[in-house]
Image (cartoon, rainbow, N blue to C red; front, top):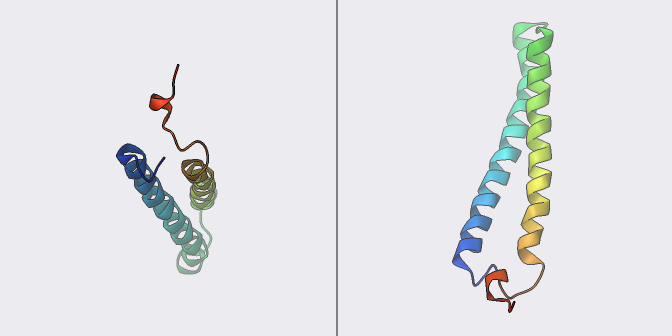
Length: 85
């Protein structure tokens, strides 16, 4: 019912924007890790862990949001609030 429900269609659009942002964030931080090592030399372990953990978390978030996005397209076309008791 997502295509007919304004609440769900807005939620889907926001979810897609957050997913795109998570992918971009992941790409940027994966690029920063080797670049920071070239520019600054050896980096402290906590900084390296942070630069590696952020893109991993963003990637996992993107995958989870992708699964959630599929739920907007699957299921019953009748909204739950319109189902008989």
